[in-house]
Image (cartoon, rainbow over all chains, first blue to last red; front, side, top):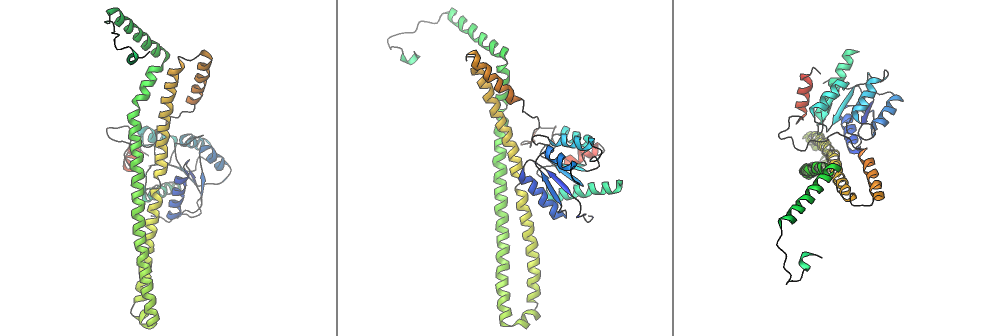
Length: 133
Length: 217
């Protein structure tokens, strides 16, 4: 596996603080220490518009603005649409997975997941981003 | 007056066909009225969801039990590793005090260093696994929210039923509150508590990857 770019800035979006801590902890173990958190899509979108982020890891089922609406908002914004969005969610319906892909998600992980799965998806997405640049 | 309060010497008149017909008419009227008000179908839908709520509660019990067991086992393993290092440290300290040159020359110091590195890596893995085991909070939290929604629906339907007998002014107030509550519902499913017999959901990450690959993603 390629060496992670430790300067990359992640935004982890989940309404459960436990899950945000778990994802942040795993990203740190994988090699990404620059991680910020948001508790829903509204907060996340505001942070994205007012900061520089390289990668978004988002839940789907959240209050105020769910992960699908956040994904749509990111992909509809010229300044944000290049940021890869990895959905990490308990939603296991095939139609949700297809919808996420069609809306522009870079990857989809179903909970519960492992550190290896998260690492593999992040690396794969970053390889695609690097190749496309 | 209740039936069991009737005097013992009072006998009930034989039920005539007219009484049965009247009862039948009343029952039909009640059924039609409830249907017309939209209460019965919704109440039936909500009651039909009760087995789902039961399996969701079972899912919570299983998830929390599995997480607790996993954490306790990992803590046991980590404690055993810690005890091993503490014991080896005491042993090495005694060797160094007795004969420092021999302690180094015999390789005991280097063995200890290697041992510490191996064990700390293992303990680090245990700590990661303990962290991952906490994901039950997120998953069960979503399931609890679903069950609470179901309880709210059931309550709403039963209140609607009672409202039919309430004065008009009170009934209107309750209707307004129920309408406001329904406006906040969302349609996401949350964790799948039972995959058996379902073709509309994936059972694991491999199926997610296969589905996305089949679509060219």
